[in-house]
Every structure is written in C-alpha cells, then in structure tokens.
Length: 266
Ligand SMILES: Nc1ncnc2c1ncn2[C@@H]1O[C@H](COP(=O)(O)OP(=O)(O)OP(=O)(O)O)[C@@H](O)[C@H]1O
Ligand SMILES: [Mg+2]
Image (cartoon, rainbow, N blue to C red; front, top):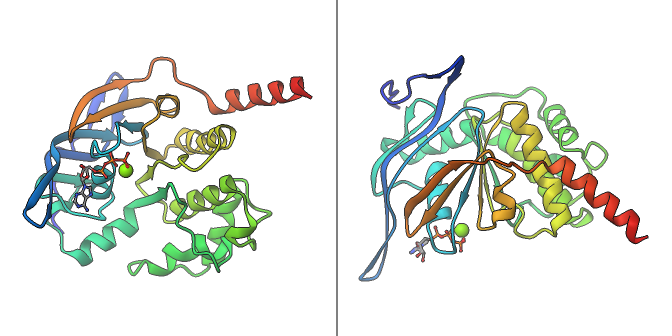
C-alpha cells in the first residue's frame, strides 16, 4: 500500500486547515461490453476535504454511480489517480482494496441493502465482523450505539420487514457509521422514500456532518442536493459545475414546517 504525501497537503484558508480526504486526477472509466466500449468517466478532477457535505448531481447515465463505485473502492478506474485519505488506491490489489473500503468508507444505497432475515442490530454489526484488521470485543454494543444515534434505539431487534422504508434507511446509515469511516458515500439514499421521509433521512446526514463526518451524496434531484454544502454537477462523464450552496436547506426546519402543515390540514 503506497502512502502518498503529494496532493494531500493541508490547505490553509483563513484560520481553517482543511484536510483532503478524496482527490482524483483525470479519472477515467471505460466499460467494455462485447465490441463496444463506453467511456463513463472522461477525466474527473475532484478534491473533497474533511467535513464537507457534497452532493453529486447529474442526469441518468451521466456517470454518478460509476464515480461512486470508484470513490468507494468497489471498482477501479481505467486511468488517472485516486487518493483516499492519503492512500493511492488506484494501484491496490483486490484484497487491499477490500481492506481500505472496510476501514474508510461507509455506504448507503437507494435500496437499503439490508439482510432480510437478520435483525437491525445484526445488520449494523456486519461490517465489524468483516474487518480483518481490527478485533472488536463488543460489536453489539457499538451497533446499539449507532442505532441509537439514528433514532432507532428502540428497534434493534426488528427485522427489515418490520420497519418502515425510512427506518430501514436509518439502519443502513447506522451500518455505514459503525466502522467510523473517513467518508460516507450515499447513492440516491432517498430514491425510494416519500418527501417527508427523505427530509428525515437528510436531517440525519446533516446532523452527522455537523459532527464532522464527511458526506458524499449522489442524487438527480435539485431539491435534495440543496441540503448539501457543495454541489458538483456531472454530465456525460465530466464535471460541469462545482459550487458552494448559498441558501442551504435545513432539514430540521423543513420538518417542523411539515408538522405545521399537517396540523393545519387536521
Ligand atoms: N457495468 C457496465 N457496463 C457497461 N456500461 C455501463 C456499466 N455501468 C454503467 N455503464 C454505462 O456508463 C454510463 C454511466 O452509468 P452510471 O450508472 O454511472 O450512471 P448514473 O449517473 O449513475 O445514472 P442513474 O441516475 O440512472 O443511476 C452509462 O452510459 C451506462 O450505460
Ligand atoms: Mg446511478
């Protein structure tokens, strides 16, 4: 595993020192199917610092999931460099890639990806049991603490089919937190949820980010992206725009407005 110092220097802006968590240089991804090659990423240059909350936005087929799979060490690029938390990952073996993924990344997917015959507690514990580099003496205690963090301390023994969609996604978020990852990657985490439940899930991401966790959220909806602090727009495998959100939405505030509307209807 090669440790790289160049490109992960500390950036000084005012009094803040920002540590680079993710850096890509000219990232390229080609998919080969039969005689056809699709270039899904055409040279992505990206820098994300610790504590950021970034939404990656783009239309269907623009390359969002391809990018997330590479950033999440689920797949390797065809070209370019990727440095994750000071480690150059594009040169790693499959085994090393799996280890770094376990240690540094928390995943949240649109379809929750929970094991159905397993309790919330066991689902959340799972990444700890796969972590070969660390032995955890009491995984259940850590899992209960993560579930409590997402407001599910009273649902630890429920199975996924005994939980609502929003609750299942919260179990998935608890699972993503359990390894204390450098970054949480969420691919369309609200894609299966109604508006109010989506905002509830976003309130958890905002709260975790307020606590210092770096969040990368993929979405094709503007409404969702505006809960992030920064938006990166992707089109046809390239970054089109990259900007800070000026009027950021606050999920807790939006939820309280929802409650007022509901009372008015009654
Ligand atoms: N495994 C694959 N094999 C071949 N082509 C692929 C593969 N995965 C994605 N592609 C192609 O790469 C491009 C980017 O796909 P990707 O899944 O990254 O898009 P996306 O932005 O996540 O879209 P969506 O919003 O629909 O999820 C598309 O043209 C797609 O057809
Ligand atoms: Mg996708």
